[in-house]
Length: 405
Image (cartoon, rainbow, N blue to C red; front, side, top):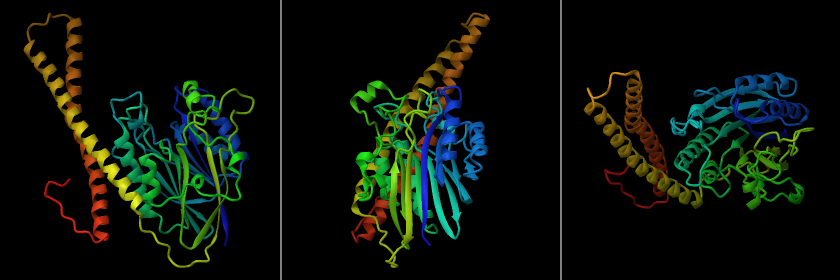
């Protein structure tokens, strides 16, 4: 009846051409997994299908079942490997996922989302969710609303699909530390447990590796300037779990399993550190259904998320005005200068460039702006619906005006 799952997650930093030492690092990752005891592996930023297929071939002896989540232009970068049969798969692509014109960030082209693999181990079902939320990139964090709604969409998917499973596990790069709103949404709505945040009598945390998974001083790819102020880095890669009421879970091992350097090399396995958690499950003595209602903590989190979305909608409206104004002025300039341009190829190229620029601004102010605004409205209405039903459940009188979003 009892069983154990040993889960591993890593953001592999597998961007073709851009990522350093990519070939050698993927070979080292495959070698490590071949020799490890992990039963479920979740990887992110495997942007090349070639890298996935090589991993699949290398791991077929120890992790014979796998699935790659194809999406967007470059693929989602997400894949799952398992010792046990993957029975069902599902992928939910987020509607709000970065900006198409931010080519150097590239998140939009990845078609990011959350992938679900339902794994069958004997007569046990294990839900495994692999995901990678939008990165921050800058201190002003222009993608905060995107990441918040990605987190909410992921949390709702987990919340609505955990029921048949004996244990549900979410693993990946959330680009959020335990104090961030995105992390709170994902852990509070479906009530996922972070094994690093609960007491473990049998685990000595003093003997664990540094738990920071990004910008950690022990990683060869970390920025030295960031490491000086915070050597342990940020814990943004997570393995979270939730067990069925019929089971009890005990975390028997957790930490950062990979060495700080690839053996005989001067570089790390990735620019992120890996995370692993070993969970032992046994039948629960308490057979009654556990309470699943949300506490007041998520009320505050949802309110905060609504505020983030509302502020983003204001900024999008301002952006629309800017894009349409600039695009319109450029178009008026082109129309007003008809007949004044010398009949030379050089000037024809300039006119073509200016026309393209006008077209870009007008498209951004209309089509793209509407897509982003509707995506924000969808997420905002879902959050407001949650708050509305929570107030109703508490027996408080509430009314909404026709202008409510």
